[in-house]
Image 1: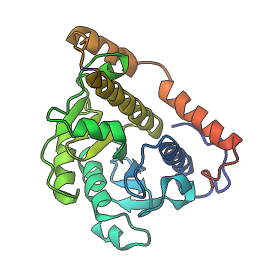
Image 2: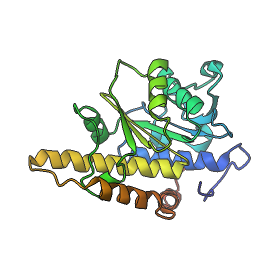
Image 3: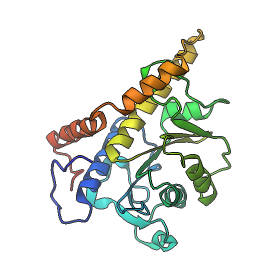
Image 4: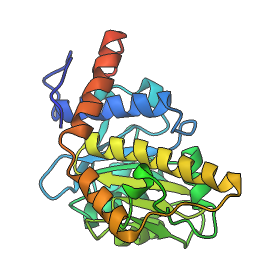
Length: 253
């Protein structure tokens, strides 16, 4: 997790984590990966991952500040009674993931355009046809049991599909996407690249031409090389925060 570049409220608990997450919200809105005042991110702040930060209910991503984030306990449903408690779908998804998947320290759920188009196809798997799509070879799963809004049942189902730490992305059929990772930087960078990869695939399909598929061997080799690429995610988020700081953004307040 990158250190805070700017902090006006350093005494709030988990401040560096809050600042990173607030920056991710701001850039998700700027890149148009969000949807109105829906969608939600969370970040674990204790050892077993059951206490986590989350955006307040229906606050636009473009306005979220580090101090706005609420702290929840995945094992305490009474958290839903507090001020600005998340909506029931956010609790259902993120609470289940943080209870069952301690390796998924950060979870980001959006209905971004291209990932959702992918989720709407009869086969929602992402084939390896270029470097970005290869990044997710063997590292994404598909939930094909959509049954309406994501309450506790869908949360438990999604958590089960994310139980394997190798699975970094869950394509939620007829719904959207859930991306998980160890840090905000890793998870946001993964979200960014998955949306780009989905766009590449969708645009390639639109040509009507045969696709140039990578072999499984090359796809896995590329994915592993990108997994191991030094500091890419941390540097990405640091640069994005520097841009916000230069603009005088209040995200870190």
